[in-house]
Image (tube, rainbow, N blue to C red; front, side):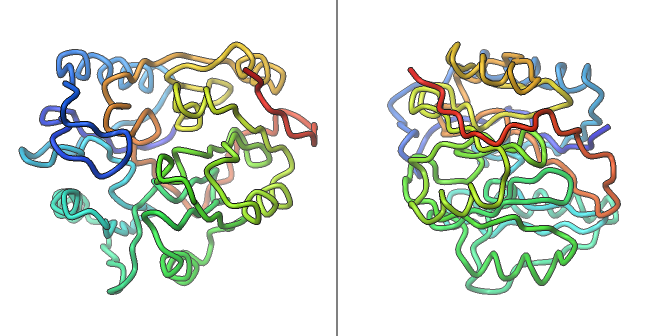
Length: 288
């Protein structure tokens, strides 16, 4: 069972633009957004997750993207320090919830930009850190000092602002297998990723751009995803995974999908790692 935080999209909307996906002139279907969020919650519970809910706050339009709120390790909560002023008011609401739940709050130092699990993608205590668009390199050093038990496999420099968070361009399937979109990173980072992870599955621009395929959530052998091309589904099947579609059309208008909607908890005594699905060491590109 995995414990996660979520926040209902009661006040979700796109009224400003802080990434290339956000266009205030495009209406959000709020009824559909609520339905998509509830279906996702139901699916998570069916698969055995424990979900806790932080109350939404009027005026915090992106607060439903709980994954960006910070990092939870054991009884410690590290709140995010957002670059965008529009998102900064979200933080105190999450801090309030964690304080009421008896978590220790560890704030990042001045000058450190850290945008939670948006830029920390993990499997157990193995993690990959992203920086360059939102989180900065100082965040990497802070994480190393504050979470010494985290096994940072590599850090990647993000160069495409469409993939402003690492979680938009990379996900673990298991501790030795990742999906990633190469175009989001500089060449040195792509090589570092291939050196660090045994199985690197490169997704096409269609999968990354149209479906936000890397912004998925993996539970057992289920890959919860907004959608993907038949080619990528075939590759996932070869690695022993099944695609389970959870539509996210309304949330993608704000530049987020399934992975952004959950703040998953990390535990240092995590021994129940997902089994390695494949012994392949070849990088696959899902062709369009």
